[in-house]
Image (tube, rainbow, N blue to C red; front, side):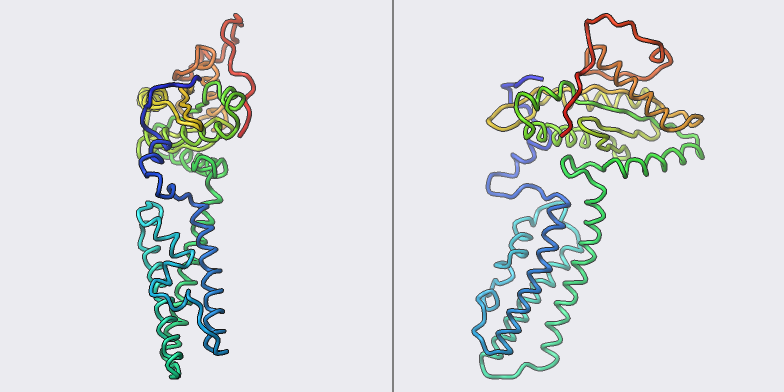
Length: 335
């Protein structure tokens, strides 16, 4: 794995570049969860301030009287800056933003009534409280959904974690036992990953891991799944695929990674490759044994020079004759 001078394209690092320097990076589920939690707290503080102003006759805060008060609020500003974020472009967030704006508009209107020396009618006050209650309910539902999502996702790569992998593998295995449909598994490992950490630091290693995960995910078939297996290893499930089909898919992933260097800090671009081991799941043996076979195929790919796809076969079960010419990767650092 060496720095590359050419400016290849593709992967998460290039998507970040295309967003432009003045636009925030794409949100991750944990970012959205944190913003929702802060949004709820912010509305609670806003309402406390509003009540203090109305009940005690204190001058209202500018956050209440400004025409664009909903955009001056931290949550409103955060959402507005990410209006084109794919993770937030869904009806539930549209409703939440609408409730947020209605809270600020109604609070401003009622503040104006009080400033004119007029009483607030019960129906008008109830309308404000209803907007607040609706916002809390909407935010709670979204917060619960994203909390579940965050618990299932590896925060660095954005892939599903091992806990979800185990559940999904059991589901696929049981389906295959019932239907007899083909299912292939693959283990993949970034080649010479320890050298990235040793040479450029763990921050660069994190960038490489996230970029590789994004590159792989964008080149799989829609019904394939990829999980962070541990360290720099990933597990991929390929349903309805024999070993020939699986090999073609993984060669596409291998080429997508090899063909475009990954940008890290200080303008460096690293040429990164990966090795793959495939197995067709045998429903007559425990699933764990099929994963072990994929691991043996991955080991063989490393022994044969890395940056290649190897399919498990009975011959891989035979003891290797060490020749000292091509050892597998040294123990890798986990990041």
